[in-house]
Image (tube, rainbow, N blue to C red; front, side, top):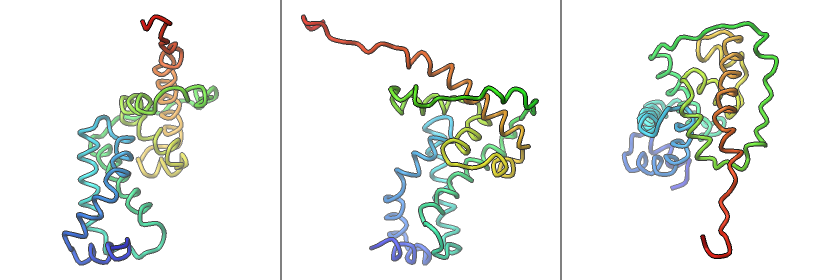
Length: 186
């Protein structure tokens, strides 16, 4: 079945089609979940919740725009909903802290993506969400403020703090010399 046929069958609640759709997209959406969740277990829960939501709302998908993009929005919104339910406190700060916010990601290119992802997952939830929405999914601070129910300045502040935490935590990994074998095999 092609994707259009799968979508039509899923709209009719065909379990085989739902299973095929899940198999097609579970890996990509799981990686997306990992960006927004603090660990693999939470990411797996978010993935399952997202697919339940996808299957319950699939009748509302009208074929306009990318189906994968539509599923990604649902998946991101599931992570945001969990964040809102947990009611994290956001502190609004002065714009002056945002002035020195240079984050040279190219200086971290030698670090394996799995290490970077691990450090992103360890960020406090409000910082992780803003960082992912802004840096990885290209949302604006205005869009983030609406999604999360925070001010634009809080969004900017959370991004700034996330970048500083990542910069500090990734710096030692960037400076580690690679191990080289000596001529005698040691």
